[in-house]
Image: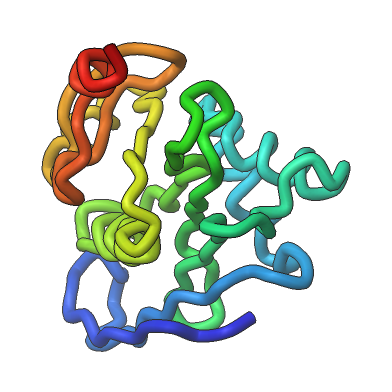
Length: 177
């Protein structure tokens, strides 16, 4: 794994820690052992994205290793705090999709999810492709909209990233005509 970003945060979210070094790592050679902590917690909350991530990785169905794809983890010290990835969209050709995004409950509302999503989106800019997401929970749309996604319910996704100048599915269809 390669560390690509660090930040120092002061936040009550991190329990009694006065300062906590947050780092983000690219996953390349295998999922970290700590991924099981994310799987357990996400499953307890009723989310399946980390279960799917692990299953697809283990079956070599999706190892985020194609051009423009990436999987990243977020860490607080030695504790895994979250995960997120970007793949080619399975439905919309020549587009990317943010997926398998999960931040542990105790790390939410402290900017960590936003920072992870922005790091992933920065990686998509050179490709110049639309980036979609499927906000699979009732609280997720507010998060995605806060970082620049707009409603775009079509083709198995709910939002498209407007921050990169991408157009909605309707705009893309009009352009193709």
